[in-house]
Length: 218
Image 1 (spheres, one colour):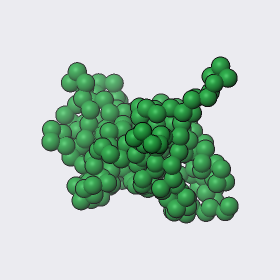
Image 2 (cartoon, helix red, strand yellow):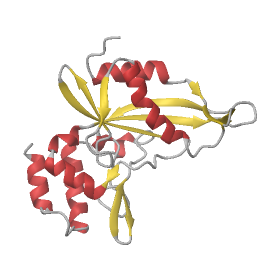
Image 3 (cartoon, helix red, strand yellow):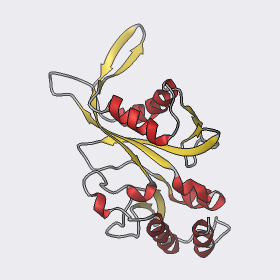
Image 4 (cartoon, helix red, strand yellow):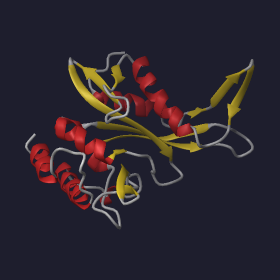
């Protein structure tokens, strides 16, 4: 299959996966068991999806640093595209981590083009009603980061704070209220800068003014 760009990859993935049912099976000591809990489905799908892309013939490899944004890099016509892969229980609001806040600030300062990363997101529904087990992929999304984030009630962006320090950036309910997401990349960048001002970091070698100047001029 010849896939030439991200949009074609998304369209094929959406067509082939939406509405499909699946199971997660553990094989151990010559015993096979279908897992019926919900807590590992999202993690398994996030690991499975890049394998699906490779099955379609896409050149996609893990990011250079495993703990840093982005997860993967896809190559089309010798051009690299940053790709993040996420999954969540579609019955609930999204609660996956988008990126570690400080790591995101640092990596986008070094490489502002990462702000244009593509987010492949699977919304699944667990199926454990006594008649069937496993899960169903309800929706497939292709988004940019500003399309899945929004201001929270307490902070300029959705962010998890631990011990008065920002930890992880969190999504908004973009599948239900897309109008609440940031309208543009510039709106998102300005909100990140405001969050940086609320939580200045002594470990970063640049200020929030340095960061926004660099990413806006990219």
